[in-house]
Amino acid sequence: MTTTNYFDISGRTVLVTGGARGIGLMIAEGLLRAGATVLVSTRKTDAAEDAQQALSEYGNVHAIAADISTEEGCRELAEQVRSHTNHLDGLVNNAGATWGAAFDEFPPSAWDKVLGVNVKTPFVLAQLVRPLLEAGAGADPSRIINIGSIDGLAVPNYENYSYSASKAAVHHLTKHMASTLAPSILVNAIAPGPFPTKMMKWVIDERGEEMNRANPLGRLGRPEDIIGLVTFLLSPASSFITGTTIPLDGGLTSTMSVAMYDPINTQN
Image (cartoon, rainbow, N blue to C red):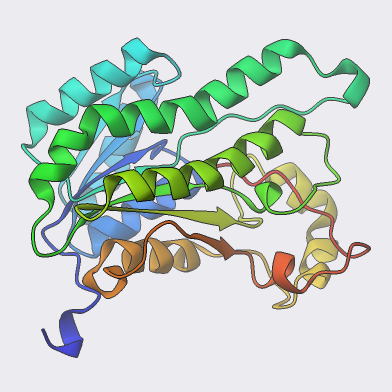
């Protein structure tokens, strides 16, 4: 191996859930530009059609409509993936849900929905596509990348109780899965800070400058930030890393004081 191909992911086949918008769409486009074949999932048929059209100019993409908030939907997605490929080199568990409400008004249903999508679904989907990931493993292991959040690393001021708890669970689940699936499958997590996504737009519009000042690097995340880290974790350069959660937040959670931290829901 030469230094020129440590980060080469061309020819790899990767499934990205929630790949029709936000961070998932950024990841999908970046992987396609890097020469990977990408399968993206999204809940709605029209969103899948839009993603297929938008991403096809960058490479070989298959957009699949499947509601993976249910076990049946996870099985449907796995079946459709198998119809397109006989192996996977990577699974990016990006799809997620959130809920915000005051403590005294936070409904029990918000726990069922958010923990189901954010914690149960990545586990069930990994179970279902494990044979494809094992088939893709060779000299370089296959990869699972779970998208967590800085809200699972530090206590957010925003009242998103089930979301922050679910992301902390994802970070720990990553360690547990890594222990079980090694050495043929490496499992790592990324904990993004604020990125300019549709879900974040209202917050950025109201408090963008304040968020920039609170960050040691003075800015929000950019598409190249998440693309670069995902590419690294899918590439041979990361073949000795598993079971870790990497903050992608400009140093916010690593260098913050309690007074300066004003986190925002970062999912998608």
